[in-house]
Structures are given as structure tokens and as C-alpha cells.
Amino acid sequence: MKINMDKEDAMLETVERIIKRCLGCNADGIRKSEKITNNFVYSFAVADDHYFLKLYRSKEWPEAGKIPFVYQSLARKNIPCAELIAYERDDETYPNGYLIEREIRGTAADKMRFTREQETRLYAKLAELLSSVHGVRIENYGYIGDGIACYGGMTDFLEDEFDGFDDKLKDILSEAQMKKLRAQVLGVTYDFAGLPSVLCHGDLSKKNVIVRDDEITLIDWDDAMALNWMADVSRLTFWMKQSYNEQEYASFRNTFLEHYRTPYRKAEFDVFESAWHVYSALDSLVFSMRVGDKEMEKRLRRYLDEIC
Image (cartoon, rainbow, N blue to C red):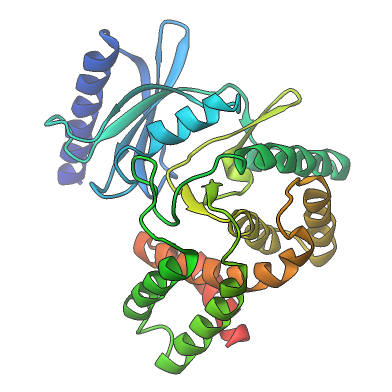
């Protein structure tokens, strides 16, 4: 227990030093967010303003330069996003890097209680917002870094992703199962190779939607990638499927698709979506195992067993 307390005290001192360096003053009410698993996140106040400080667990993720690139791209299209106060990926105070952003006032949608009508309006507004986000074109596919992705096509990206799944999930899924799933995903997505590469949020769900009055804002762009629009929307509907009964899922999904705007093969979305749900399950299973989310791991393993 003392070792853990010593680590917490040392981390708090690091947080205080970073805030003092970036904002030139001490902060009030520094509080660690306990339910965040992929990074260390602290909320704090300076005068009447509220902020978040995110300390990255990894030097490699999110890719260096990605968050400033994403925020600048959104701002150019007048798409609301958090205000980036400080961003550093090479600092002796905390070598993995950190960012400070001003808190977006409002409530995360997953913390709110909606009527059926209110939740339907939420998905309509999210569809309109995401239509604008997907108007940001990006060169190449995959991981963004400073704004240029690293794969010439989505198939190249997926081949590398499945190579990683083969290694990370070898004790979970048999070689025959992985081969079947790879063929299922790549066989479909290859037919959509001509869709343009756009800015994708990468982790669309209600937990990353802030609601204030009648406005919504997307937060947490750490998983942002350059993929086609169908990949981003399919990730959203994958999590919707895990959260709602069949009737609710169909209703909210249809509302979203009715309000989503794109000139690119919208009528064929169902075909791509089914394949990308498989990829989403594999990707989420790797993450759940890494952070020790046993409940989610069991759910995803059941889902994959059913389709294998």
C-alpha cells in the first residue's frame, strides 16, 4: 500500500509541475479520473476555468502530432472541439508526453437519462456532426501521426492489423478461426477500396459525446485514424449493438443512417458494416485483454465464437 501511495504522490507532484509550467500558476481541486484505463487523466481548475491534463501511458500512442493535427483540421471546418492549451511528447518532466485542454462544458451522453425521443434526436445530431467530420480528407490510410497516414490502401492496413491479431490472440482463437475471420473481413473491405480516406474518430460511442443544451461535441480523439467513412460508422453501430436490445438498436441505427450525409456508396453500407464489426470485435478484444476488462473480454469472445 505504501508503494502505491508513493507512486500516487510522485504522480501528483508531476501533475503540479506540468500545470505550473504550462499555465504559470498553481491549480485547485486536482482530481484523478479513476475509470480511465488507457491514459492517466486529471481534472483541475484555475480561477474559474476548468481543464483536463492527460498523461500518456505510451510513448508511441497516440501518435506524436496527431491531436494538434486533428484539432486544427476540425477548427478549419468550424467543427467544435476542445481547446488545446498545451501539448508535449518530449518533456523530461514526463517523457511519454501530455496534453492540457480546456474542459468542454456539458455532460457525457452515457451519463444522461434520455427519453426515446431525446435519444433519437441525439443520434440524428451525431449523424450530422459526423458527416462534417468525414469531410476532412487525409492522405493515405491508417495511423495519422502529423497528418499523413502510413498505408497506401485500407487492405494494406488491415493485413498488418490481422498479423498483429494472429500474435496477440493466438491463445484465444485457433489458427483456423483467425484465417476465417481474416478472409471474411478482407474479402468484403477489398471491394470498398475506392472509398476516400477521411478523418475518423475511431472510438464513437455515447461516452465520447458531450451534450450541452441542444449542442453536442465529440471528445477523446486519441484513436483517430484515416479510414473510409464506413469504418467509423461501423465502429459506432458495433457498440450500439452491444448497448441496446434489437428493437432499440434498429431504431437508433436507422435514425443515424437517415441523417448521415455522404455521396459514397451509402446504399451498400450494410455489407461493409458486417465485416467491420468482426474487425471491431477483434480490436476491442485485444484492448480489453491489455487493460484487464474481464467482463468485456468475455462478451467479445462469445461474439467471436458465434461467428466462427
